[in-house]
Amino acid sequence: MVFSGIQKHFYSLLGTFTFWVIVIFAYDFFRRIGVEIIPEIATNNYLTRKENFFLTLVIGGFSGMAHFTFESLFYPFLLNYKSIVSRITVYIFFFILMFSAIIHLGYYFLHLLFENNIAYPFIGIFKSGAVLSFFIYCAICLGIYYFFKLINKKFGQGVLKKIFRETYFKPRVEKKIFLFLDLKASTFLAEELGYRMYSALIQECFKDLNDVVINTKAEIYQYVGDEAVLIWDFEEGIENNECIKLFYSFETRIAQRKNYYKIKFGHVPEFKAGVHGGDLMVVEVGSFKRELAYHGDVINTAARIQHMCNALQSTLLISSDLLNKFFIKDEYEFVFEGSFLLKGKKTQTHLYSIHKNLPN
Image (cartoon, rainbow, N blue to C red; front, side, top):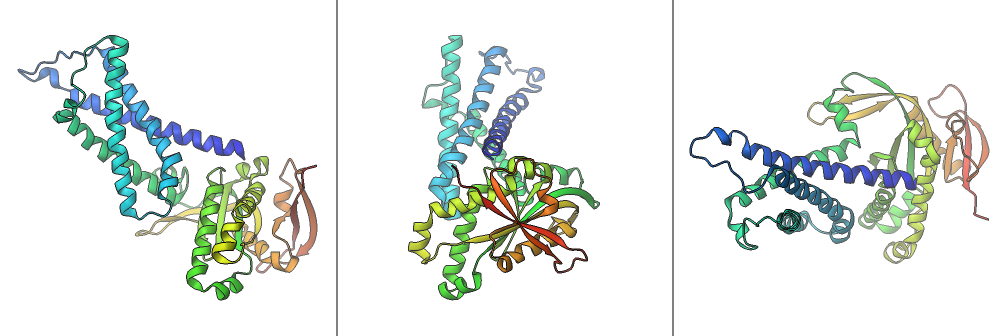
């Protein structure tokens, strides 16, 4: 699971880094193309090709790394409870500072490594129309970046690429693991807290869930009231027992904040979950509001397994079909609860409750 989180952050860093390097290289390429054939235009640049390549790489690389650092460390800390206007304001302020620093850093490295004269004084550089056009260009690219990032969050990691390729234009068979996560005693809590505080409780719980999911290969498929549905590609879900570990990581996250929940809501929330996996159909549906839909017995079975948690007084249940696919089981104790004819099914499903073994 730790590896999954590191891998996710690495790909995010790599993607942000690559994006800004391409953006800066594209800017440099298109501002030069065809200049040499325009009469009375001097094409002799005080920068050699080597120096210009280095400057472009430095600006693009540092832009990507600064952007990634801001989003990973500072943005969540500063803007947890801020309005959207505040977010936009902080973003604009950060990127003005970032690009100002990056431009000067690039020229500093040129001067340091190539002993070349800097084209503009420290303040005078911002009076240049070229610099202004560069800022506008970067702002447009940034808007495009966040548009696609928003779409990617909506559909899930990697799904956007498949949609562009029309992978799901026709129903397609895929192998997935579904985990249905539901708040215990939700009716009691809603009556006890009132719906305003109850909604705030659910919001906090799902915020904690997101903090856990970001370090895994899981995707949040949807929220339904006080329930969240998570999915994995089948092999990624069983690798290192990730689909089980996520549930206990979420429990640990709630336990770490139990004092906060106790003070603000008077209750520490508890969750129950059901896990199942297998083949199902995936298809893109809708015209005005397009999304991916999953159809098949896997989803219904996972939902029914979660509903059995109350009857069996268990917090986490798994089907025997999925359990048999796991390779490493020493970390947990699996207790056979029996065979049950779940609603809507013609054959019985063997269920096991999962308990985390305490370290020696």
